[in-house]
Length: 234
Image (cartoon, rainbow, N blue to C red; front, side, top):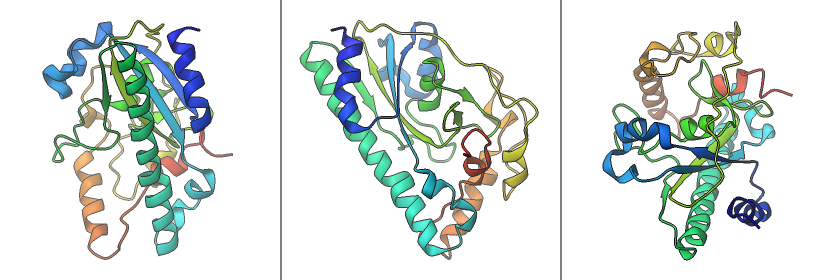
């Protein structure tokens, strides 16, 4: 069995919804912008995704209800992140025992909170692996579940069969996420490789909105751009 096949088989009992193997050789400098020296030397990235349950995502417009915000935060975010981190650790241990250098990247932690900068962009790796495209909402949009998926990344030097197959954006003229954003942080521009995020999305407006929500509720959640995407709705 190939190394790719062994990983896919290993993840099957964990009910993983997405798995892709990205060829990162052409993106070394892009990765280093966020991750610096620690992410250099890895030619491959494994992208793993778990779907946010529709029963939770469909309730997002009712997020002022404490019960809804609790479910979305806990089972639509925290628990999925925990599962992804554990899954990445298991895969990393498997590859380490095979003698391959491997670095799991934490799913939601940021190294720079002011600018929302992570060690590695999980959506970038998933995009390269062909699992989806970068939407106008700056989320990774999949064909089957839209942006209703949480992703994690494992960087590795293992000799995997990988692809460099970013999907072209398929948002076209759709502006559903733009219309529902409470603070109009989404500018409605399609993704262009190399273009600064700020051209498409005003992160600081989004962050300020969340900070305001935290002042009067236990769980500060939004997710309206995720909810509104036609690719995620059934």
